[in-house]
Amino acid sequence: MLDRFLVQVLISGISPLALWLDASRARFLAFVVVYGMVSGGYSALLPTTIAEIYGREQYSSANAAIYFVRGLGALVGAPVAGALLGSQPGDVKQTRTPAELRAPFNKIAGFDGVLLLITGVCVVFVRWFDARAKGRWKWIA
Picture 1 (cartoon, rainbow, N blue to C red):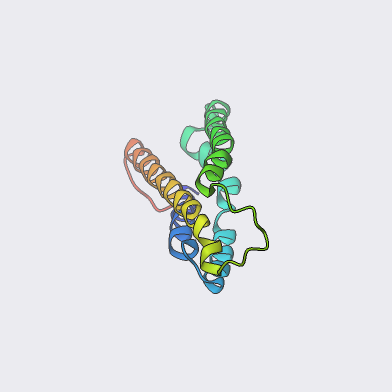
Picture 2: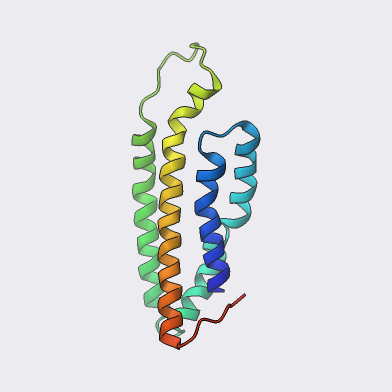
């Protein structure tokens, strides 16, 4: 499960940078499809991955620590995204080009992509430490 989780995290990290950042409509729709297909792995595979790495005896404490960190990210993520988005002109009738409408969201796409890639690097290290502790790296599908 951990290897499938690793692949999903890395694809989730690459997709905002490759498909969302300064995207046309078609590329953004491709991002929505790709990210929608792989991002569910966080919720679906996380419990089995935790049990695989830490064992059933340590599951509850490891799960609590991981969900605590995820909760901090949820609390901090929205205000940071709002700060990156910044204030927008209040005149709704002002005509803006699609590029001008997309520009503020490029910062958020970059922020999201970089954080997801950092998550992917962390998962790679967890996978490496787990394989080293068990004495082998076996592809687990």
